[in-house]
Image (cartoon, rainbow, N blue to C red; front, side):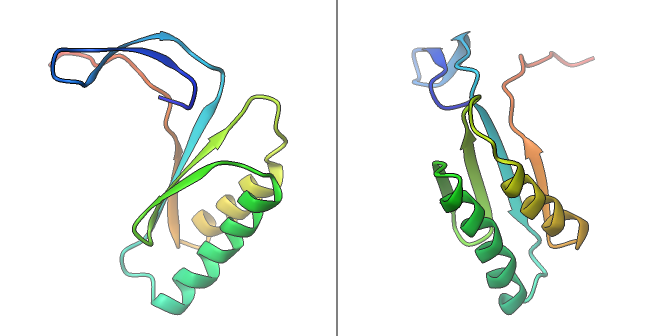
Length: 106
């Protein structure tokens, strides 16, 4: 899911359906667990710099997991380049976190 999506919650408070997508996308990045602290700080600072420069909303879960809200009208190419550099260096894994319906067992 992404910021601004309209959803339906089930009786337990969990999302059961996305009713309307906002056209925002969520970029997730996880820094590798074996990355030494100095390298982690350098790579994270490079990504943080681009998040601030593009004026994007982001949320960290600890020091190694990051989600970034990317609205449809924002040029985030410098952020994408910083993420790509971290991934290509083996410092992180990144993905787009688009909501997809759950598939049953096959």
